[in-house]
Length: 116
Image (cartoon, rainbow, N blue to C red; front, side):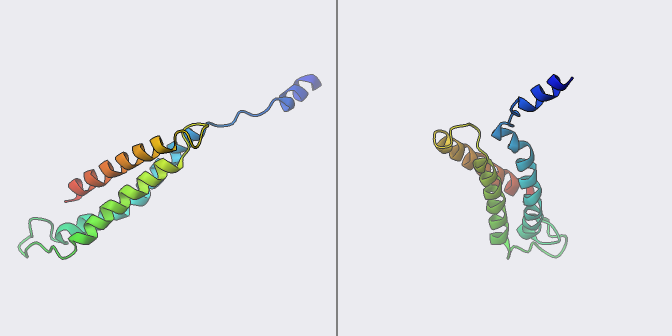
């Protein structure tokens, strides 16, 4: 019995692979970007919606909507780029950055289309 306890303590603990941090980091980035999409949705056309609702479309804050879409995309891209997917930091850094920018751009464009 004592031998089993000692052998369990002598074993080094297995470390979690760094890429598994994406499972919590990406949902946090998406949740943090949600308020930006709400602001973007109201900024495209105003509180009455894009049909105008009888009051006309209010488009003075389109720049704010575009900025919110870009910021949400940057937030997601930064999260994806920050998590190391492999043991070699420098070898795959460029690949992670390219993938992160692509996903962040697609997320920003998709969000801009959906909120407009």
